[in-house]
Length: 393
Image (cartoon, rainbow, N blue to C red; front, side, top):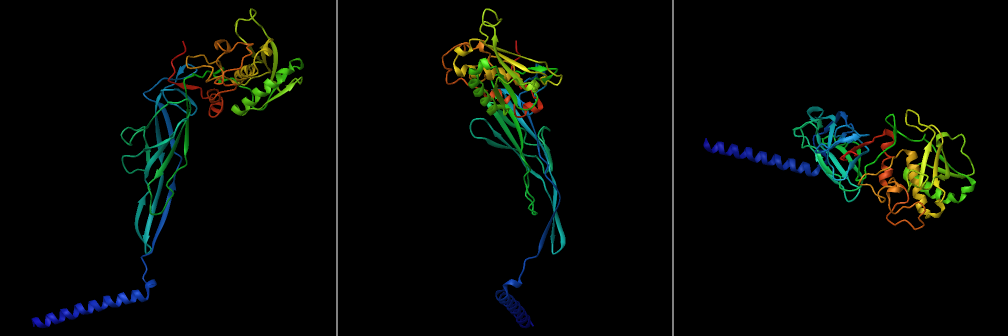
C-alpha cells in the first residue's frame, strides 16, 4: 500500500510539472494574451488654493506708520532697517482624493496631503535659498503660526540694501492619480535700507499728483534750462514710470495738478531762511485724499546756470520727488549716495552754483531707495510701514 501511495504522489507531481510546462509554452507562444489586472484611478474634490505668507520682524521690532506703533508684521512694501531679523510664516490648505479601482471593483482611496510649503528667499545680492515648512502630521492644511504643528517659520535677515522677495508655494504629496502637486507662487516683498524713508502726508494720505502725464513748463527766457529738465525727466520716467513732458513757453493750462512750472526766483542769501538752500516748491492745495489739487511751482536760484549740469539735474529730480510725495530724508543712514532726498543744504559737496562735476558715486536721478518708496506696492496701497528704525528725535 505504501508503494501505491508513493506511485500516486509521483504521478501527481508529474502532472503538475506538465501543467506548468504547458502554461510556459502557452505564454511563450501567446505573450499578448497574458495581461495585468486593469487598474483605474479617479481623482475628485481637488483644489490647490494659493498659500498665504506672513513676514514679521523677529524678535519683535517696533514697526511704525507715520510714527505710530503698529506691531511687528511686515506686509508688502514694508521698509526694514538693515540688520533686522525676520520670520516668514505660511498658511496653506489643499483638498483632493484618489479612488483606485481594480477590475472595476473599488480597492482603496488615497488622501492628498501637504508635503511642504517652500519658502524661497531672493535677496538683492547673491543667490537665493529654499527652506521648507513641513507639517508634523499628515494633513490637508497647515499654519506655521500655530506653535507645535509644523517645523516652524523660515528665518531671514536683512543684510543688503534693496528688495527682498519671498516666494511661497505649496507642494502636495504625490498620488496614484498623478494630481498636480504645486500651487501658484505667492510673492511677499520687503525693502531693506539704512536710510529711513519719509513721506509727505495729508489726513493720513500720501501727497501725490493725479495719475497721468505731467507737463513741465519752462518760460522762454529760461529756455537754456530745457536740456537739464529733459535729462531729469528721462531719469524720473525710468525710475517711476511717469512721463514728464517738457515744454518751453507753453503754459500748461487745463492740466491742473499735473502742471509744474519752472522759475528762477528762489531768493539767494541773505534773503532766504536756508543760507545754502538752492530750490523750493509750492503747490495749489491738496484734496482730503492726498491728491494734489492745483498747479505746482519749482523755483531755483537765479545763479543756477553757474552750476554743473548734473548738479542741476539732480536738484530738479529732488524737487519732483517732493511733488510725487517724498519728504527729505535726513536720518543718519541717509547720504548723498543712497538717496537724492538728502537736502542740498545738508550735503557739503553740493553748493548751489558749484561748477565742479558731481563725484561718480553720487546718483543723478532717483535711487532704488527713492524708487521703492513710490512704486511697486507702495503707491497703490500707500504702505508707509517701517520696521527697526529708531524714532526721529
